[in-house]
Structures are given as C-alpha cells and as structure tokens.
Image 1 (spheres, helix red, strand yellow):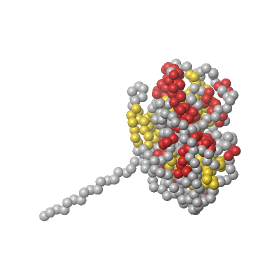
Image 2: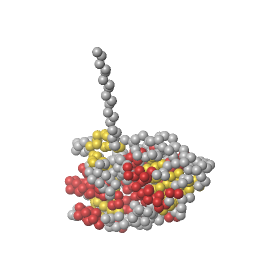
Image 3: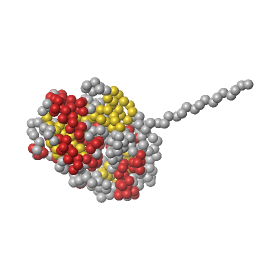
Length: 461
C-alpha cells in the first residue's frame, strides 16, 4: 500500500530587522578594533502626491550658474544632492506666484533657527523669489536674531511652503498657522534627526507634506524607512560672517596659546553632544603628553546644573575657559575664528553645524566619524575620530534606550589634539582641505542651485 508523501514544511519567514548595518573594521592607535557603521538606506516607497486644484503650471526659469570646479572630495558633493530617480511631477497648482514661503524659527538663536537662516541665504543666492514667515510656537530659546527680518512676510504668498520645523513640531505648526496654508501649495518639510531609527510617534508630521528635505544622507536613510513621501537630500549652505573688532581679548582668552573649542546647546541634550568626552580627551593630552594648549567650553542656553557640573569637572585643570553667557550670532562666529581648532566628540549629529562653520573659516576640526557630519568630513580634510556603536541604554528625551549611537575613542581624539599642536604643516594642509570642501560643495551657491533644480524639475518655478 502506497503511503502519501508528506507535504514539505513551509519555511518560516524571518521577521525583518528594524536596523540593518553595514560595518567595516578600522584599526585605531593601540591595536583595538572598532566598528564604523552606518544605517543601510531602505528603498524609497511608492508615493501619492497631494493633488491640489488644477491650474496652468508656471514656466521654468533659466538655470543658475554652475558651481566653480574643484577637486572632488571623498564626501557627498553637490552632484549627489538630487535623488537617483527622476523627480516626481505634482499636479498643476493654482495661481500663486512661483517662489518659496520659508516658514521657520528665523529669529531664534539655536540650531534649527540657524538652519532656517542658512536656507534663506541659499534661496537668495539662487535668485528664487521668497519670503520668511517667522514661526515662534513651541520654542523657548532667545529670539533676538533679526538678520532676515527684512524678508519677513505676514502670510504665505508663494506656491511652495518650505517648513524649517522638525517632525515632532509639525502638528503644532499646522494648528498655529492653519491647515488652509497647505491647500493648493506644494508643501515641503525640512527635518533634522540624529539617530538611525526615525520615531514612529513622529509619523503625524508627514500629514499634508508632499516631500521631505534633509541635510545629510544619515537623516535621509532614517526618514526614508518610515516616509510615505520622497525624501530628498538638500544640505545646508554654509556662510559664516564675522564682525570686526571681536578677538580673544573680548572673551578673556590668552593670545598665544593654542586653543581648542567645544561648543554646544543644552537644548540639544548634553548626553548626545558629549562635551565631557572632549574634556577627558584634553586632560589625557595635557597629563600624558604635556601638551601646551588650552580648552574653551562654550555653552548655549546654559542650565545651572549643567554649568555647575562643568565647573566641577574643569576645577584644577590648567588653561580651561568656560563661557556660559549668551552670545549673538556674530560673537559666536568670532569665537570660532579666534580659536585654533573646534572639537566635537558627539555621539550622533544630524549635520554638525559648528564643525562645518569652523571648516568654512579655515580651522582644523576633530569630530566623531559617525552620523551626519561624515557628509563633509573624512580623513582627507579633518580629524575623523574612531568609535564603537553602543546601545543608548536609557531614554534621553526623544532618544530612546533601544537605539544606538557612537562612543568615540578618546585616545584617538587625544592623539589628534597632540598632532595638531605639534605638526604645523599638516595642520595647515588639513584646514585648507576642509575649507575647500565647505566653500565648494556646501556653499549657498551650490545648495541654492540644487534647490532651484529640484523645484524646476517639479515645475514649481
């Protein structure tokens, strides 16, 4: 009697991992092995653009001048800004004037405010009509920067809304500005985020948006994995204006000492910015190598407990200077120009503005070789510090315990501090390479050109 063959068991489908990593092994000084990893971007999902009422599409403008040629760095240049796939064409828009309503914290003296102001500079350089809607809801930083007040408008006027408001604040923005602002316009969110996994609780931020712009590939990979709309990389266009008459004496700093600078904002969460790692790396360089140098710590939006902890940590150390008073934008830029090197041993960065600003001014920089700053930093133009990835382990505001960030190698950072002080020729070559990178590929002209090309490709200009 024939027996029936047993049906083949179906293979169990493996659940996809929330985080997928590509890793390479690098060898730091001293022989330890550490991983340098980055999130693997997911394929962009199919999207359905919002379809405003139909109307004739405005004519495309002439192309803006090309960016001057320069040696291609091993970073993400302007040519890599546009997505690989052709831009999606939205439905025709009603008769709003072609241009951009730049909606954001234009007067606020913090990172997201500076992001808005940098965007204004890039848009202006591309000769795109625009106005600024100064948005204030949900922000408690000082709002005294009036450098773009002359471009402010009372209400949106143009056919594109560009929100320099992060995902977690978009719902409040719609309630404050009014959802009718979105109707009949192409709506873009310009977002920052600092970890590999974009939070599910921010999903409401996608509502009413046709696409998202982000400044780095790191954020692009994170947001793309959760986004129902296209995510396009448009970097910051860096320009640093420094007023005359502000020097080391203004800040009470010694004239002839090599000075490192660590600057951060407590609103950005100290555990992520990691200033105490910079202090420890400096201490090692001073104690083990006898380094003739000093360290400046600049705290924005100082918290009394944070300042007290810094003072306790710095007590008894030679040549350390803590600046905890509020500085205007011009003063902050002058402080960067006054020092010899900027250091950021961050655990994660969405972009890393102080590093880019220092490079613009021709200063060598030391920074953790992970997250957003790797779009413009590598071994050819900066001191890229090795690290290992660690689980956060506890919640810090929006940064949840299950996620990962970097633990920078302090010995490697200390080594770079010593080398920068003692090798003047290498220091000058590195600083010059960094300045070329920022002024060529991350200039207002380069970014403005990318913005114009993106919007023209969508037939919005």
